[in-house]
Image (cartoon, rainbow, N blue to C red):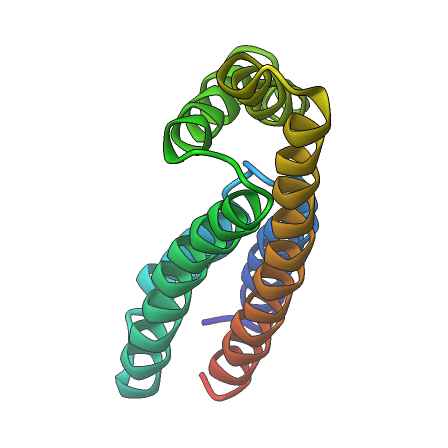
Length: 165
């Protein structure tokens, strides 16, 4: 492959890797999935050599673990704050739906609002509803740092793959 094409492919994939990493700031944006898709594209273009297959398997595991742990941490934070499982589930659904309807901030507004209103409706106590909301926010904050760490590891692994191709 000509050097200019290698550099162009690297730059394009790096752009999507950075977009995924920066997108992790938005809680419902699938930044790890975007990074994984960029790596998949890179693997397809470079024909998945042995190192590429191994790295891509690791990236796949990281993306799946990161996406799952993300939801668990957010849910655990809300639960620790006193939110019911139903409120957490509705908040997750509201976050996804409203992100699709009003990207990128619809879900950021809808999910916490869902927890707050459902917990108030359930408990008839604003203080306990706010406590559940604070738990959700704490979970979101912790989940962000976990996602960011996984995203950085994914990017470094892709760099190693790209530099060894």
